[in-house]
Image (cartoon, rainbow, N blue to C red; front, side):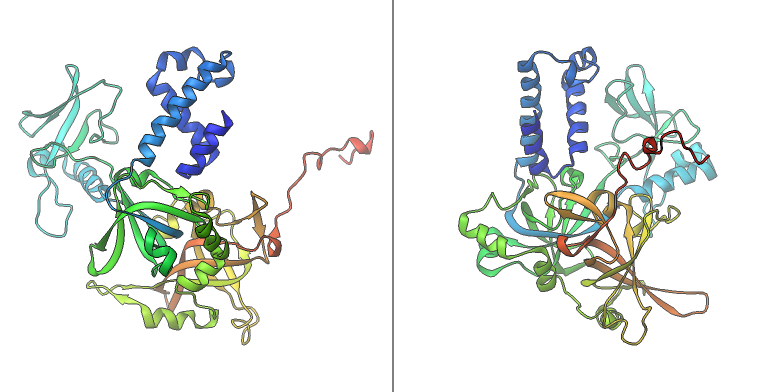
Length: 443
């Protein structure tokens, strides 16, 4: 059992907890009676062959889902940053619910909503489970769409309205309602197609834009990876090259997938070298504000967007608890924003207390080991002073006095040198054991 689950963990990039959760979800879906008979507990299955049959089915199902290559070429390289998730339908859902709260359902059904900056109107339907099916109605109570299914199976297009028994449907034309939740995940990669990578090396950092099934995957960073994607351009600028994947991303990790000659190249290419050579590395922390000003992009709206680059420093401060009142921005993903401060000798030549402050999302900490170092195959929390590489996007903001301040949103935090990292001390189970004190107690 352990071997099958470990194979899927490695191929799909899941944590052990995610693997067990998906196994239980799959088991319950394909054989609910058996799942209920054993209370979802594998330890209650006495027949080993039955256990093997379940695991084999689970493994083959996810292998088909995960390794069915989509359109495009095979790329090889490293994922060096997580550039956030976009909720493509968020604005329309929020506008629809907001309109109902202010104007009422009758007005919204009649007039629709305008979630865009232009005059386009999006139609809204009222939905519910009626006479054995999910049905959508317009402002005249005319049925305009029907979706067969059980009442307990909420359709992907249904949007719950706080305090109401009905649901909303955002209509998408003749095909019916739009999917209520649609996401894109963006990763920063240094990669090249398989043939060119081993002859020319990785290209400059570019965005890997994942949608549909590919958006469900949490890729592993800072290790060799191969994946299937198509070359494309960014929606905001045709001159910006990106990679796109909708389904069949098929990520495979580690060097065992490569030939002996190719393995040798990866063995020489460690993550610190990758970041230093290919990630717009800025070695002098005292000059990163100048780098921002020289490389920022001004959008049509007038807002400045800073560059993405890598930096290196020694940890001086870590905020483990984070602030959970941050609602927007890359560093707010996962429900909280954490602060990390680093310094270097060049930065403190003039000011011995100078530090660079970086905003780190809870997502990076929980899913991508931002505050941990890997040593002998195990992850450990690190503390100051530990040397780290950080991939960031810079930005500026003005305080109440009108002064410009610089901030840096982390896309990746990696401690590449286990032997030069400070490991957090853990409390042993017997640390609070007072048995050695005999009958003496201090309380």
